Length: 186
View 1 (cartoon, one colour):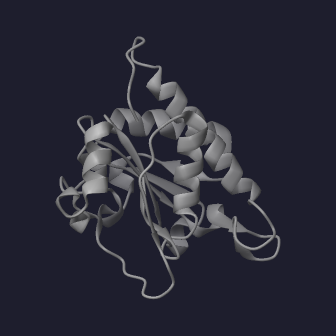
View 2 (view 1 turned 120 degrees about the horizontal axis):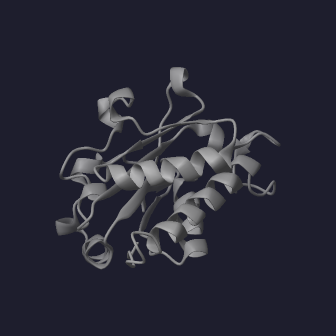
View 3 (view 1 turned 90 degrees about the horizontal axis):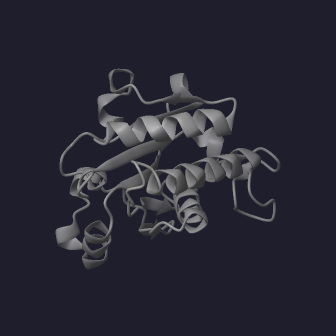
């Protein structure tokens, strides 16, 4: 899921949709244009206001929600919040293995409160088994060849973005088959 996609939190929708496609998972996204760009706080993104979001949340057991953030002190850190801490730990291990030179933080005590995705009204926490909110720093979404966002222009996908997508798709595929063979819908 990426409901701050498009021009707002660039590349988050690409990461979410491509990882979902590769793993056979469901996807929900909101793609914003440049004019006007509006950041709606996660706690205000409500299935009561969107039949498509309501249908998506009714369909899935868990969700992984992509967001973008920028903090000078965390330039290479992915933050894994949300209320499903088992899934956060599961995804964190796969990301650490797959993305290389980035920190992956899944300890809630080390994630800034406003980025931790803990509010019960946050869509990441609305499915039956809740989910994981992943905050992506700009550098993992940036294509250093040509100095622009990954997947924009004619430079293609940034290698770090591709590794992220592969790691997320692998994590989603493994999760859906985990838990003693119990099938998870994602």
